[in-house]
Image (tube, rainbow, N blue to C red; front, side):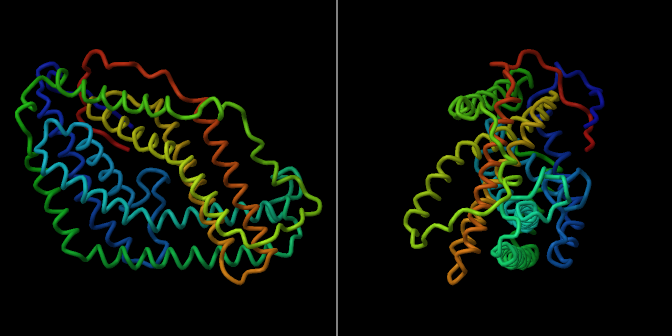
Length: 367
């Protein structure tokens, strides 16, 4: 991200001026990206670019970059905005984010799971995993791959249809109207007239504090030892005996336990993004948080992929061999979850308890 210096004096800018400038910029990005994103959504299923890919890869990604930043600013700096408008706008932006995120998420999940299964089955290029995988030659691997591919393709197609329907709806037009009005004038309240340093920094500090508290609640000590994440890919040999079936209740309990274990990490991911966007408003560099953000994105994708594998393993009338292969893929993705947690604990910085001094926002942002 390239920052250009601010032309006006940062010390004399009001909170409203700084925040309005940021929101105007992001709303403009939203309106410019919207037509291209609608065109991408109207193409064949799978045409939407990955949300975690390189910047500038498509209108959908640029649209969602703006959606996330506007939503984050409305959340962190709600005290200087008209409450009803800010809450309604955040709800609509969250709706659009969730809508457009589904199809690319299924694409990434399909690529992740099929690549993992190919590696475990010994299909990956020779030497890449250090030897034959745990599922090399297993008779259930081809059927498990076909099942995952079929289920995720169907889910992606359904998500694509939902996007097509909603992008023609009055709801999206109403949200675009909100962004058009935001380009002209942000609905500010009285505190916005105060100095930006006095008004915005404490709220950004509050976002830091919420993130720090959430991280303190994580079991970082438990995640402080590296997991052997490649072990399943190089075990080789005969596969263990397939365990008996008929454990639906136990599987449900395990799913609930894993979801509860993952939830605090997903919460930290959301708070980390809010801190990044709060720093952008204040013109502060957040490069040290970008890698943490990517690690937590991988954590969520691995956790979601594990859920998909476990759900596929409970598909009615599949063979025990197929269910076993899907169980191994589930275990592989849970190892990826643990590896991401270890990486987060290794990277987590000592965040400052407060933000001292005011540098002011940049005049423009690219990337």
